[in-house]
Amino acid sequence: MVSIGIGLPTMQEFETLGPQGVARAARLAEAVGADAVSASDVLVGDGTTALESVVCLATAAAVTERVSLDFGVLSVPTRPVAMMAAQVQTLQHLSRGRVRLGVGIGGFPGSPFWAALGAPSTGRGRLTDEALRALPGLIAGRQTTAGNGASLTLAPAAPVPPLLVGSGTGQAALRRVARLADGWLASALTPAGIRTALAGLRELAEEYGRPMPRVLLGVHAVLGVDHEARRAMEAQLSEFFGFSADEVRQASIAGSPAEAAERVAAFAEAGVDEITLALDGRDFLGQIELVGEIRTHLPR
Image (cartoon, rainbow, N blue to C red; front, top):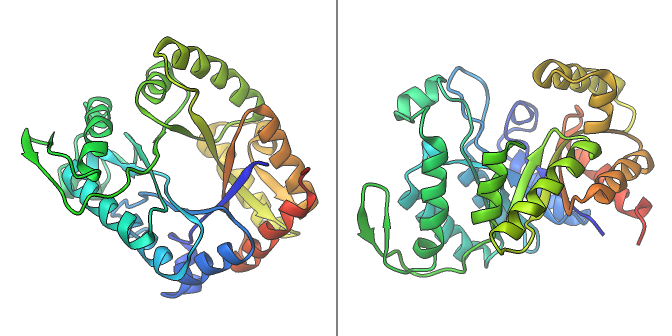
């Protein structure tokens, strides 16, 4: 059965849920049977509410026992690889090995946050390749050359988490996934788009003599009868991605748990192994409870 994860309330949801929102959402996600909780780099620096992802997953780790802790994703250009490795290594210890490390070249180049960090807007693919090569050794406690050429050893060693790459469907991006990653973090794709991308990814994995990466798909969702939130989600996806009305419906999930289960099954049939739901309904905790009902409608 396809696995289901839940994105934590790290943006505007925080303004409603308050400081306990991340912990409450993580506990509830585990209680309803979700397989993972996730957080990503969404810091812009223009006054938009956005919580830092490492701290959010550390909070989730402290109040859960079972769910995977997913970075979906950490933006490599904004984080020195040695610091990233140290944070992940620590979180692996404190969570007893539940981290799955998603990285990517993206984020918000040109934003005030990137400018304040001096994060580069060019050469991001090269930086990501270098990070993917260095992270396993650093986290595992082996002497490794990273960043500016310094050689270092981090301790105590931790199990190396699955390395996932978040990217689009371009040839260079999929080649990076096939060559260096354990999984592909995709988003904003229809089942038809997934099938097309996976055909290319499978060929690239064979070219490198590596197993086919797992496929994890991020999907925006509004569950239940929150029609206003559903219209807002669909309008946002249409504007941001240039989707037609039909493409928006195909690339998102909405409706009752039974209707949502049909969409989840369609993504699974297209080749998706895991789905992470970005919940856009206004009652965030109520949305998590509805996620728990989706499983009852999925084929065993």
